[in-house]
Length: 267
Picture 1 (cartoon, rainbow, N blue to C red):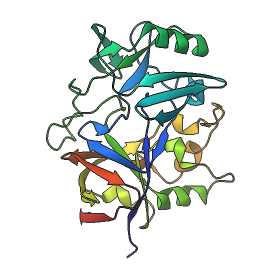
Picture 2: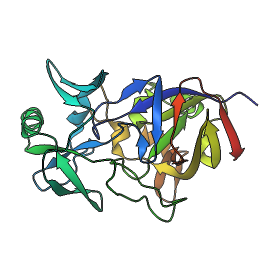
Picture 3: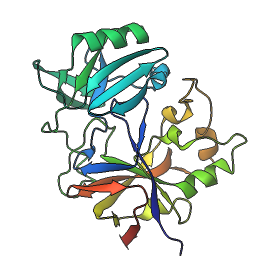
């Protein structure tokens, strides 16, 4: 049996914008620290996503000390990671959930509106705000930030390699926007993971991840295609949905680092 090791860590501070690769991250109950704590909403307060606005992929992010730098072509803007609450909460919609969030700053909202060509606001989801995961899959009444449904997503490099072996043009793993990537093991073995640890952090696998059209968007150009969903549908489709990766919740607050060993308690 091959050794399982954590090989990549990713966060996506602003939902549906570019991701940031990290050497280590704090594991919090709602997801990795800073992961999807902000999002863009339209004039009606509904969340914005690459599914509808694929050019959101063209915003790239980096962390500089306690600041988040957001880049779009030759333009950039800074955002404090330690956001101070300075405006009244407002109700916004993410999927079927209505949650309380706070507009970061009208100047930030205007900056995004200008570049996306649509009136929008950048909002922040405070750590203490509530958004329960689907109770059918919860382990202990877990909460999630502004991710689609669950706090964490893990994918095996073996799963990605198996997919790329079927494609005429290999794709990067950023198409699937994972939080955690691991080396070793068999393709798609994460589907069966239940109770396991990464270093000292304990996770529970709750549900395979059903994939959407975001996976068909080139994260460098914002252009849509047919892959990888066309190929995945030939061998990863069940009950009308295409699955790739495993959704997770955590048990306790900890930290993970690239290179951590992964130990399965119950697969």
